[in-house]
Image 1 (cartoon, rainbow, N blue to C red):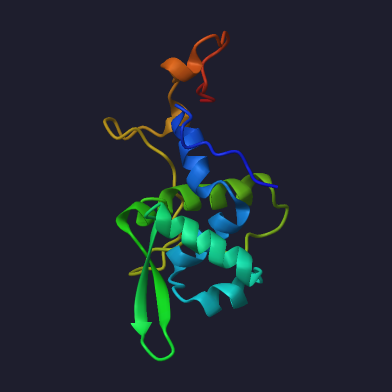
Image 2 (cartoon, one colour):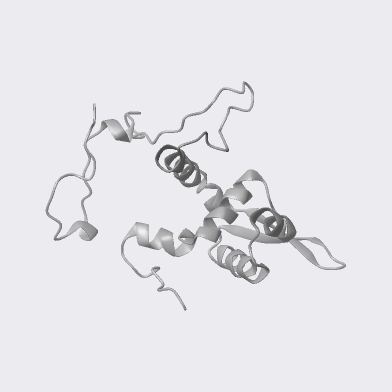
Length: 160
């Protein structure tokens, strides 16, 4: 069964999901952000079928999230490196992890983030670039064509 392509949808979320909206793709990105670059390492770490991994890596390369770079001629071998577009997904993956830690677990999370130099735990939040105020503390609403016809309350309300 082929999934519906969302790249022509006017919504930025739909466009993003067209690139990274598959669970295997997100796990490949997670591992790439952790430094995994080689096909066999992805296969071993994820337990993903080889054909599925090939298809997802090809998709990420086509969408310029990863770049396939040869590292050996005989036999031919390549590694998959994050592009700047791929690196820009780091906050998305980190916040998805944080959301899963908070809302889907009743035990200690298996992974934590810490500052390299100090070992200090890092607790990521999304902030408004102009003010530095956490998004959770702002009352915001979405405006634009995708919101046409939706009546209701703002997308986010302050809980403070």
